[in-house]
Image 1 (cartoon, rainbow, N blue to C red):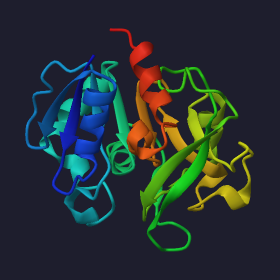
Image 2: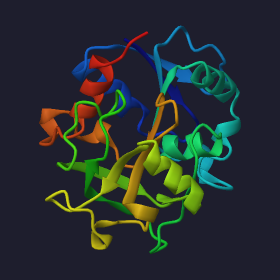
Image 3: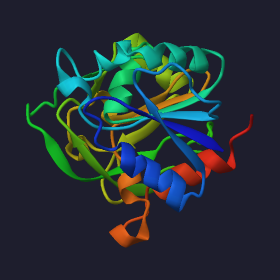
Image 4: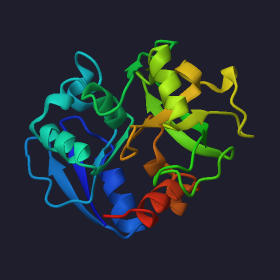
Length: 230
């Protein structure tokens, strides 16, 4: 596969993502500058974590209007695969590619620690190889990670198996006290209705290299690549 990783002013997880895709997963990767519009024939686009444009206005709001996003939106609407992690998830929501929004954490503080999440569905290429109910230990680092959507949207996300992950404890149990940021229904990641756009707050790229002592995130990249079809 050929991945394009978009770099915005303030991105700080771009090279982490490039490293995992190129060095760990052995895929072709090209950096894509936010002012460009050419996606260079990529099979999948990744919007990495960070603080695009300093998180001014709302996290991801300005980045969603970057020149390259018009191409990313068109690519996604034609069925192209797009993954957004943390700030990338925020950008996807701000651009309308995913429903809902990311609000300030309930404690009004930036949080950064390892957090257990569990896959909720195998009906897409990103979580197809994950074990539903098994806890994955994935780092989080965000100040605006509280997922919110109105009841009708939440119902639709549940009915269509669009909820990718929920925050849980080490045993995979989804409990209120295992919710780090106040996200509605413990939601940690979602996909769109056609299941080609994926967003999640936790950082799987930070736990995909054995040198870091944790490879729980690698299963998601493995799944994406294994089940990708042009």
